[in-house]
View 1 (spheres, rainbow, N blue to C red):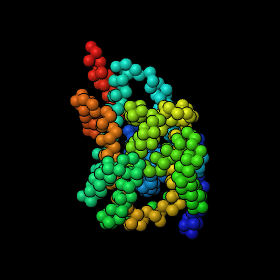
View 2 (cartoon, rainbow, N blue to C red):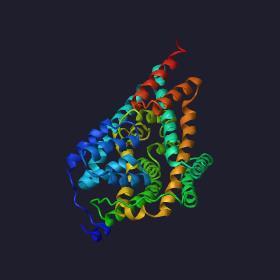
View 3 (cartoon, helix red, strand yellow):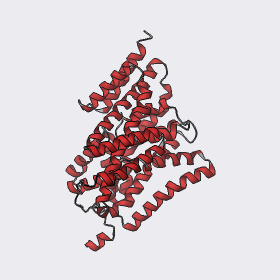
Length: 410
């Protein structure tokens, strides 16, 4: 392919098969514990080092793009790798295989959650909420070290937290993100700009422009349709699509967005919401499959398996549309210093938003006694210092919460 063809966004031919992509990502979907950063490590080991689908430079470039966009970064990287390897069918195969195992497990948990009654059952649910405290605290700490390494970005993070606290709900989060981008343009202009590394994908710029148009049509149109028809399925699509479109910084940031979208309208209780979020830590694959639990567990129909599929697709869709729309233009965009500075400020503001969510609703709903604080602290140390697998921390926290729940009755 000539440089002219590449600059015009001409598609290239896929290099593999859909079956190959599905098999590789099913293996990853069954074994990738530990959150998005760990997922990226698993992807590199399996697809760069072992299978040699692309080289390290191309992989690093792709990871940079997916961290730049809203949505679940590891799932977007997987989607893009499937796209590069086997075209659009390969992208869908990669997403399905990586997402399905954890989605099925969380739907099963939603069906069985009502069985957790009495001190033992309540202790298990409370243990999952304590895991959520430790996991979100770990995310805040890790993201702060990476995204707020200097005084300027630390200050933007604090400002983002204050805005998110004062202006509750999605409005505060949007204002914090916009404010962070504006501050980034002023305070983060001296960041190093990486050299562009060309990675070709089997889509062209016209297709990318169509994907971007569809993203905005859905973002604007779904609220209007929901208001016009008042259909519960449309309400779910609107709430989850909007949440997925505003998630900068990884899967954990979706917590405050979804809490505002589904708990405040009364579709699910805060206790059930946080229990499902804790359960999501114990399964492999992307944290966004928490949407499958919510879709299955929420009260108004459609719920169950249909609700799970509806909410799961709606939460992932905006990030994938933005990825498809950006890939043909990424090499030109990422070299612009102003874009780099704005995204540095945005990422710092996201740390502040997540810190505000750590306090409410996560901390205020889970830490009800000194015993709770002790368990959450143990979980945090296990995750951050001992590098204990998340599923093991979940088991230990559930066991500890059950023991403390049974003490008064003994």
